Length: 164
Image (tube, rainbow, N blue to C red; front, side):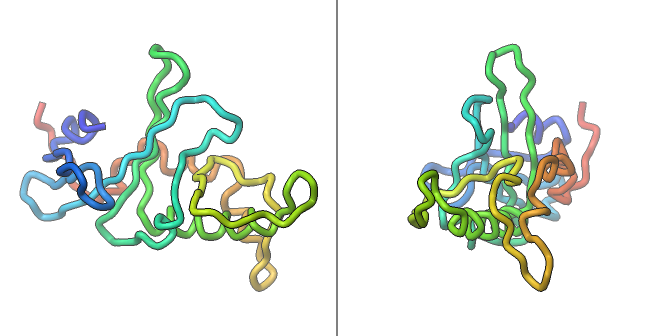
């Protein structure tokens, strides 16, 4: 993750232990913009191919806060794939899809219990749609919704430099 930032000519460093809501700080070489990044990593195992999140991520929104969702694959030889998302997109997704999940009956048809756990997934099409003003809000999170964010480091809004 740090190597991806550094190779673009940005200044990046791990945040101090215990820093709330961030893992990496990054800026351009002129210190014109500072970004905080929270990294979420998964191996390609499990059925929903998602990342663990919490309720707090539904409200953690700032113009300079971004998430990098990393999938390291199943084997060491698999390519690493990163999706870079603004915190507002993550918060909206988690809030909308969790609300829809709560409204989808469990395996025995029971009402689901709310918890602090959330999942950011690449596909939510198995969740019952919720409509607002006649629009299905889950449609925006169906198969392929993460594709526009794949390796989109420019989402950070930092100018790249050729330092190598």
